[in-house]
Length: 206
Ligand code: FES
Image (tube, rainbow, N blue to C red; front, side, top):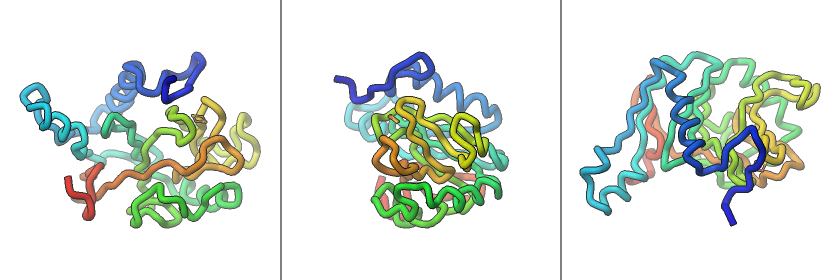
């Protein structure tokens, strides 16, 4: 049985080539958003070097990511969202709290430095693995508050179309949804104001 039970016309099986195409298309849509993977030319590597490179960190230029914009990069075959949250999105985190299953991020889905109310190192910048913790679909943006499909009290966030799990702008799952935990926050660090390294932090040896 597949690890992912995503079905239906509006989304792709989780680890399919189609999903990878979607990822790359999403990154490409950013135009000026340069993404530099710290992975050497793969065909020149030995098998053990290739395995190591597959887990290598990814360096991302976030200098042109405007408030409200999100980019997606691939790390270890997974989509990683980088969302530059607006002040309104940060306010929506507070509004969402009473409706969340784990508002204080008590389950270990993030490094210690992201165990805070924004689940981030910089308040405005969300860095999260965009894979639903239910069965691995990729949630979509549902940024508009009070979206008619999600109800008048919807504060904005993400919707997993597979079985209806919803997440706020910090990737925290709402109560009574199939997803058991908040989205994963990967290890990451800032190399400068505009350079983000995903997959490595001060504690991680890569
Ligand atoms: S995969 Fe089932 S709700 Fe997301």
